[in-house]
Length: 150
Image 1 (tube, rainbow, N blue to C red):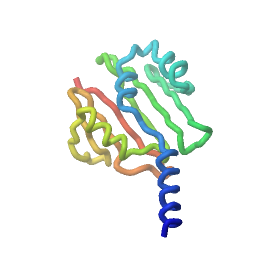
Image 2: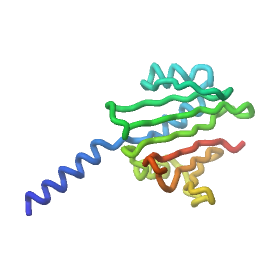
Image 3: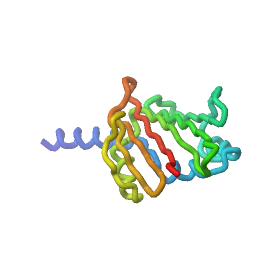
């Protein structure tokens, strides 16, 4: 019995230790930084790689942690002309714990507003709306959107 319990604990530990966390404070920070200085924060400060995009007023960054594709994160930053904050489109691979992320939203004063018709769970804090995909896509990745309603 002790061996079975030890094996179960071992696999739980591996799962917890290998999961990545999406940080709401980091997302809030990059949604407010000057669009022209965002490269310093993303590349120099956090180890992201800038990706080529053909859309004006959009920057896209990606990062793979520990050379494991299941630790992939992609963040697109859309600079909206009418706002002091940016819209973020985040895609995270399967090792990111969406349950922990949703719990952190509530701990950081985001109110759960229910699900919308497009398959997203909606959270709101002041003028910030955060949408979290209810289910991963066919590749196992989750989508998160952060937008401002002024």
